[in-house]
Length: 391
Ligand SMILES: [Zn+2]
Image (cartoon, rainbow, N blue to C red):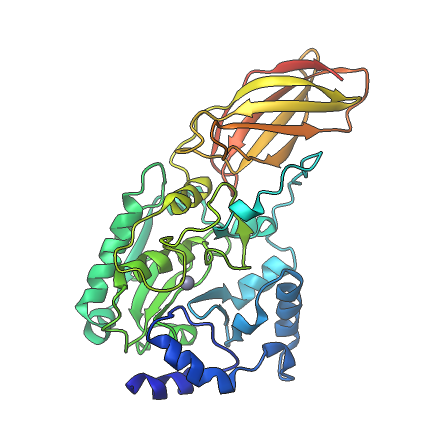
């Protein structure tokens, strides 16, 4: 039980460990030190600002821990503190409005369990130009301290991401630390930031900010006999790309993902023979698609006075699912007037989705066309034909 000493020395406010097997014993041992962070009087004004934001957005505050420059969430992930404050203060918010569908679409949340970045923070997703050319470096400490099985696991984990069809994530090993997007090492390695040293979980990564992947992954020096190394490597790369834990309260539900998926690589816990599941693949493709095909605008008609009912189809909704659908509006003679973005719901069995857009001038004739986008809206399809409708 050498881990016990390690664990108690590392606990601060609360722990939500990634690992439910043998580590549950340690979790129980640690409960006596489990204080909700909101009760602590020692928070700085910035930390209170962060807590207010996380509370307002239904994060599990018991899973939050403040380090000097890092905010830990659920033990093995979290945010750069300064980047999270920029997001909270709206300094990196995408100002383009997203319109709610009207009338309300069927609530699909029960069928949406995978989690990504919150919609208002979508500029935090890794940019198109970076995600297809990510490099990772394994410091010597990883193999020397944690064991060479871990270096093999991260190589294989990168390969699994690279082999994911219709997804542009590409992870290439580099020996240049200056060039590396993600640096991986032992949690005893002083070359890693203090936020990633002496960790209580098996491993720790972080979430992207400002369009860049999170840059550090540390592995617990006592995790040499952990039996789910490959799953953990795939999982931590997933956090670096923005994915949250499946089925938790963090981040945005990813529409069209299954209600339960025990084998998801973004679940917490062990998985000794991991592979990307249906929801993992969809999550990867709506954020980081390789390419898109154009939607068909199948019917555009008047729903009521001044409101259009528009049905489109993404015939490749499994391999190339859209996150957003952008609806363009034109005059009857084709002069562009503007657009609105709606969440694409082509996760049904046929790739069709119907949406409604009201507030147009009654009695006028307009034309509409649609185009699909990924989560960050830096990858898009071509545009459908224009369809005319009298409103
Ligand atoms: Zn995790």
